[in-house]
Length: 87
Image 1 (cartoon, rainbow, N blue to C red):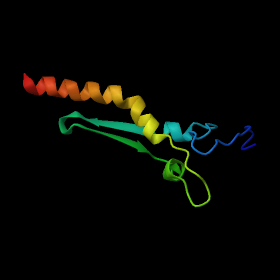
Image 2: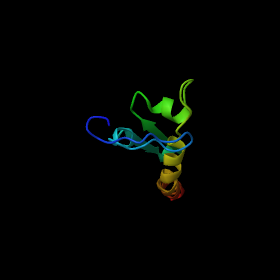
Image 3: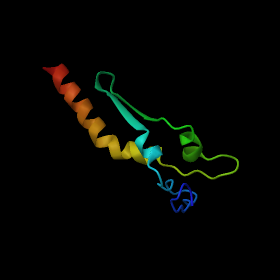
Image 4: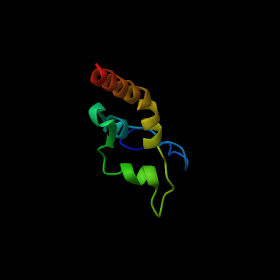
């Protein structure tokens, strides 16, 4: 239990267990269609350790999956920018 919430750790290779949604809520995506770029950022101090692992813990990848989930929005923004520039 952590802060009164039951906790089940995620298995190596699986996305991190979601107890508080802090990691998920720290996610931002900046669309920069004019540069054909999208920037996905997680603002927690442990995000990189979960994504890539540490010497004491195997990776719990989630950022690459989040990027895949946002790919449709990025593609749409880039296509819109291209259409605007072609007009």
